[in-house]
Image 1 (tube, rainbow, N blue to C red):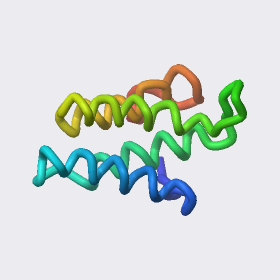
Image 2: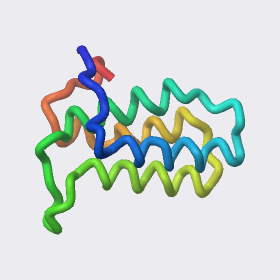
Image 3: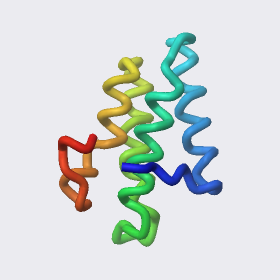
Image 4: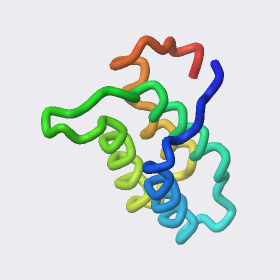
Length: 95
């Protein structure tokens, strides 16, 4: 699967998450978190919550909670991807 890339107006979300994780894990794998965010954002693109907010804010929020708990980057990546298989046409083996 080709990932198109994060929408420019979402870049601040990725940067905020990475900054949070770097505060307790200076060697964080930026690429892993960025790829997980981009995959989630691309797969959820066009989906909105009942509030009208873009869906990507939900997995991003879960990932931020994981960062507050000082969890590792693999767990944060999983948080970003946690609804992709359930709510999109993506298959588990693609992730």
